[in-house]
Length: 560
Image 1 (tube, helix red, strand yellow):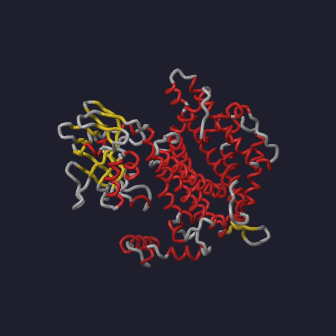
Image 2 (image 1 turned 90 degrees about the vertical axis):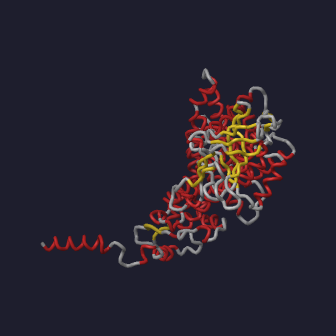
Image 3 (image 1 turned 135 degrees about the horizontal axis):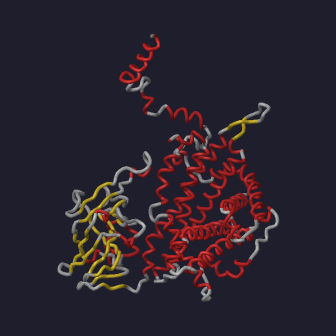
C-alpha cells in the first residue's frame, strides 16, 4: 500500500521523486496507519505531525503508548520508509489525519534513525501462516521531516504554515483502499477455490459405508449431505471469481476517470469494494473451515493443507478494514441513497435497482413451480426486492428516531443485514451477467448456469428469513427453491471434479495430500507421516528419563 498511497495522495512531483525509488527497490516502503489504540477509527489516531515554520519541517511524534504504530506489514524488519498517518497540527490547530513519507532506517546499515523505535510485534495465529510477515511496532520521538514529505495532492501546508485544501474531493482518499480491497476479493476466490478443490477431490476418493447387502462402499461425494455442504462452496468460488473480475474492471474504470479529474464513480467503487471485501472474506474463512470438516479427521492434519490455508486466510476478515465496520459504511451509503429517492435523484451503478422503488416495494414473486427458480429474471427480482425492502425498512426506522445518528446506532444490526443483502445482490447479478455472455467450450455454459443457480438458491435458502420477513416471496416459494436446489446438486455431481480441475492448480500449489490430482491419497498420507521429525528415532527422546522409570515402577507394583 506504500506505492498506491503515494500514487493516490501524492502530487506529480512527489510521485516522480518517490515512485522510481520504490520500483527499483532503492527504498522499501510500508503503510503505517493502524495504531495500538486505534484501527478502524482512523480519525482517532494519535500520532502527531506538528509543523515548525522556523525550520520548514514537520515534527512526527508518538505522544502516548497507544499512539504506537502497530501491525504494518514489512515494518518490523524490512522497511526503510513508511507512509505514516498522523494528525496534522499547524498554527495551533488540528486538521485531522494526513499522510507523511518518513524515513525509518539508514540506507547504509539499516539501523533505525535517531528518534525512531521499531521492531516486530511477535507471533501470530497458526504455526506458520502470517508468522513469516514482519508486522511491526513503531514509535517516534520528535522526528523531523521536510515539509514536502507531506502527501499534498489533497491539501498542503505553505511555507508560512497556512493549511490549504485542494479542489480535489476528499473521496480520493478512497482510492488506495479501493485498489487494495479489490485485490482482496480476487484473493478470496483463489483461497476458496483451493479449499474446495481439496475437499471435492478427496470426497470423490473417500468411501464410507455402503449397501446393506455387502456391496461396494459409497463415495462420500455421492451423499446428499456432503453435496449440500460442499457444492454451494464450489459455486461461491466461481461467484467470487466473476465478481472479482468485474471489480477489477471497475477499479480500472475509476482510475482512468480519476486521471481526467472525473470523481463521479469513486463513492460507488468504495461501496462495492468495501462491501465485497467484507462478504467474500467472511464467507471464504467460514468455507475453508467447512472444507476441513468435510474432509473428516484427515482434514485436521497439516498435510491436508487446510489448517495452514485457514490460518493464512482468516486475518483477511480484519485487515484493510474490519468487516463489520465496512458493512456499516455500505449501510450509510444505502441510507443516503434511499433518502434521495424522494427527491427524484436516480441511483446509478449497482444501486440502480433502487430506482424501481415503487415496483419493488409492491411486487409479488411470480414463481409457481420449482423449475421457475431456474429463470434468472425471477431470481434477480427476488434479490432486488429483498435488498431494497430491507434498506427502506431501516431508513424508516432510523427516521423515527429523535436523532439520526442515535437511530443508526440502534439499528446497526439491521443495517448490517441490509448491507449484506445488497452485496449478495451484486454477486448474484454479476454471476447472471457472466453466464449470459458467450462462453467457449462444449457444455461449459450449462455447468456455469448450474453453479449460478446453486449460489443464488443456496443464498436464498440461507437467508430465507429475510425474504419471508420482507414479503419478497412466500413460504411455498421458499420450499420450491429448496426443492430445486436439491435437483441442482444432482446435476452438479457428475462434473464436480472437472469443475475443480478447471482451476488448474498444481499439486505443489495446493500443498495437500488429500487434494492430489492423481487421487493417490492414502499412500501419500502414509508416506507423509514418516517425514515427521518424531519418526526420526524409533525410541523417543525422554524414554529413559520418564517412560522407562514409570514402566519399571508399574512392573514392580504388579509383581507385588
